[in-house]
Image 1 (cartoon, rainbow, N blue to C red):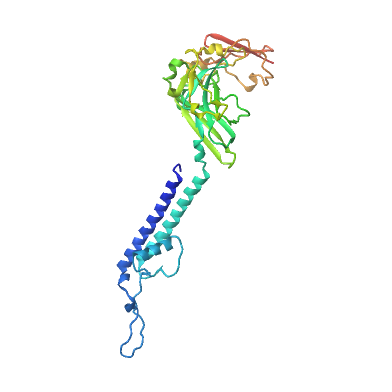
Image 2: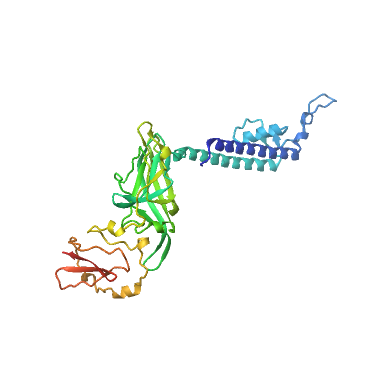
Length: 388
């Protein structure tokens, strides 16, 4: 489907020519075997020399009528495969071989027409040429941006037509270990893209797609020294429709850890004279970036939620499900818990970024009017949450 049109049309024409000559050769062999070329006009009728009265012709009929040589057999093959049927050439019931060849050619001829029609229709309906006009940057960059560590890559549209209803997704595939020590070899993380209007993308100019590496990001905790030793793959996907045809399209690329550059930013593609300079599309420039990023300062906001346990770079090394399950309180019925929580009152402190164990829930004191739930992470006290 990705081949050029001249190659597709050449293969189609070659397939038809081969089928014509192949079945013409079979018809020629059937005629030779039946002895059709030995029958001439003198054998069709003869005259009685005694009374000069014309007698009936001899009872000897050809297998393929009006086929005298290979060229006439080729014409009969073309007429049969394309159902032209002039009427002068036809198969008789004198030989079973000719009937079998005719049946085989009719079946394979229809199959060949179906394949060619499907290939041409699919190539016409797919906007394969436009896939060359949506380009991704060769590298993705990790650098601080607006006081946040970000992952960025660049996309551009080389076509004069626009991509409407375009959306961008960024996924991460890597191994994940669950809290029960189950290893998932190819776990799919969905990475949040910032600065999108209603989740859609409009890029009449090259755009830089940004992902903030915060506590919600699967890249949270990554450092420059550990970047090259990681094993994951980032997949960028763009979906949309072309404005002049309405055809839906799907473009994607991927980035390995070796294709991520730490401490770089993209050079500007803007040009006031000729629009945009796409020769500088993949150019990057070095900026001042510390090799060790302080994630604790980055997430020091007061109302930050706890760090997710599934973050691959901050996963707890030691975890015992049996001991933790035994320490959890057991409820006797569904009425042991409050039936309705109206709102969250206050959060007094934030979580420590060094995760060492799974969170536990202390038993709820039913005698107090205010239920106090304390979350503990390891040996450090985390937060109090009051419910009304």
